[in-house]
Length: 290
Ligand code: PAJ
Image: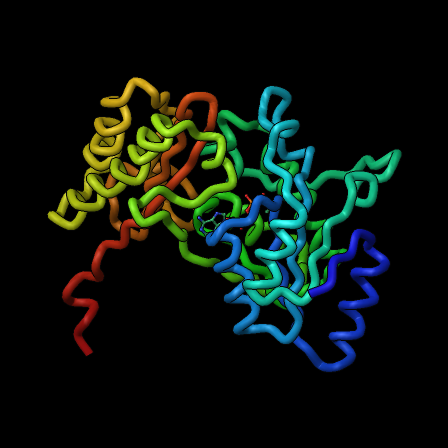
């Protein structure tokens, strides 16, 4: 695997691969790579002839009081993790390569960004959409791999790619979890042992709601209440939101009648974590008739 820092080097490697007839895949990341990121890289390796991992801690998607300055950075570890998952190229640009002096352009996706994480992080998705648009133009991938862990981000990027005619297929990848259920996240390394234990409330709350759903519960308030009850039981956890929304439009729902996203965000100590699950009602038995 090769490591490059400039767009010119990146372009020359990608052009060479494309002229060999390879399909180009990309997994955009902010580094501090874990098995969740590696699942995206492995999937790209299976489906593409040339796999690019991008590593850029994007300042524009962090709010003023968020964790930009202390976000974990480990280029050597990330290079090893990318290579072992099968990447061909790691692109790690410095900030001025992405945002040169005088930079003045942004991409805004309306609607999908208003609720869920957009409510408490009002400038976040504008930063994400802008940098992902730029990364798509820099890499010019055929396929781009994103995790369902950041479900709203995935929907925002799908919408942007469609709206702006990026010739890229967005490939969603399932959430990778620790053995006890905690969704893997670069931010998990901020957690003290007590907070790490408390953080289990997110996946356990979602699990409680999933169990109710399996028993036939379709009422959003009851399903969200099951998640809240678990989170409120732990004093180290401060809930940001629990919401049940349509899995495509992200519009709030009162009942689960089509695939619905049950999403949670909470602060555990000073660390903000998110998790989600998609609840899929079985088709009406009539739908199964030939
Ligand atoms: P980052 O948080 O580093 O995540 C990079 C990618 O890995 C995202 O698509 C994310 O959904 C995926 N991912 C993270 N944890 C995962 C897990 N436990 N299971 C499956 N996939 C997981 O998301 C970003 O960076 C940035 O916003 C970015 C898209 C790179 C733009 O800056």
